Length: 172
Image 1: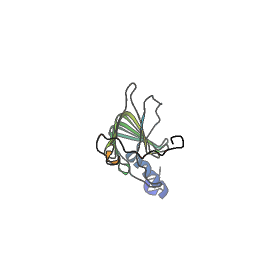
Image 2: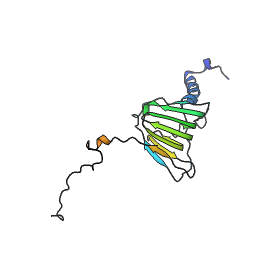
Image 3: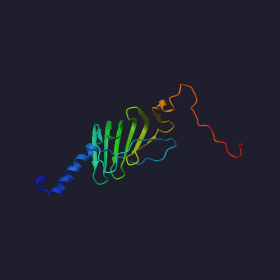
Image 4: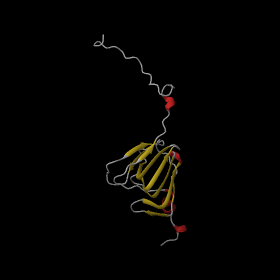
């Protein structure tokens, strides 16, 4: 095998990328469809814009043939470009499918306030969408912060104001 300093520049870049992926990426895998699921959306980045995804764990591996990065043990994920933080027992990032799958006691915090708790959470990067799946016989939990001030600044407990209905020919 040729020493790294004698490799052409293109091969050096590929080698560098292969060495960085386990640190920078997580993988996603498809799980069988289950009865209960919850979904949520996150803001998407403009097309062609690269943003860092940070993943920490006790063990990391990357399979260059399948292009899957796997991180195990006290996993912490941070995706600041989309306001996502998460913890799990395991995380996988499938680069081809552009999905991140978090599994085992998953907790996801979105935009600092909305949250998801589940056994498995799949994040579809291109769609900016989460799909949460519980353990068999259990449920997922999502908490969303709702801004009540957007409802015409009304007093608490009052009904929302509606525009008067237009009379149709049948009502006249």
